[in-house]
Length: 139
Image 1 (spheres, rainbow, N blue to C red):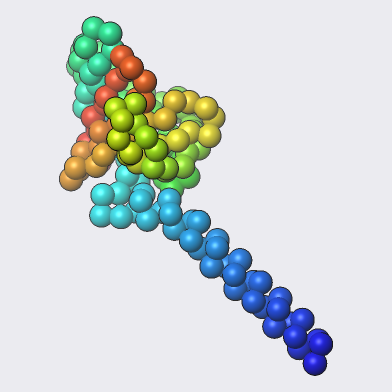
Image 2 (image 1 turned 45 degrees about the vertical axis):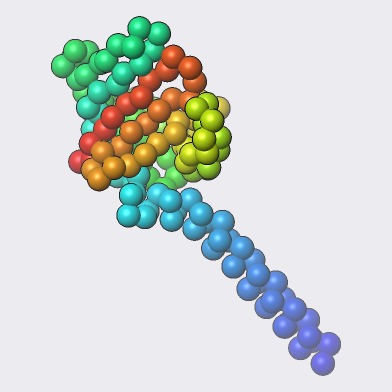
């Protein structure tokens, strides 16, 4: 009987572990994979902000930029060349604007970015004053 009880207890622990792992992994994947998914390849349209409030575009900078977002990392490309790979998580945090928002939180320590997806457009906002908001379109 004690062997059966030990086996049942171990099975219960495995079930609880599987449920916990599923809940933790779904929290990011549901946000990233839902109807307003950030997962995919995004081409840069424009960025605006900074101290001067300038707007830059691919034609004004003579550079094409894109980002490729998977469930675990963000890859940044410039003129087709990979220039950075960052691991991230999605968290709901208070923005510098005083509201709670979903954010890309980078594990490397790079400043977080709040984001919204509207149809085929992704808006990324650097979470710092005098920083930039960038607009991308899904490929």
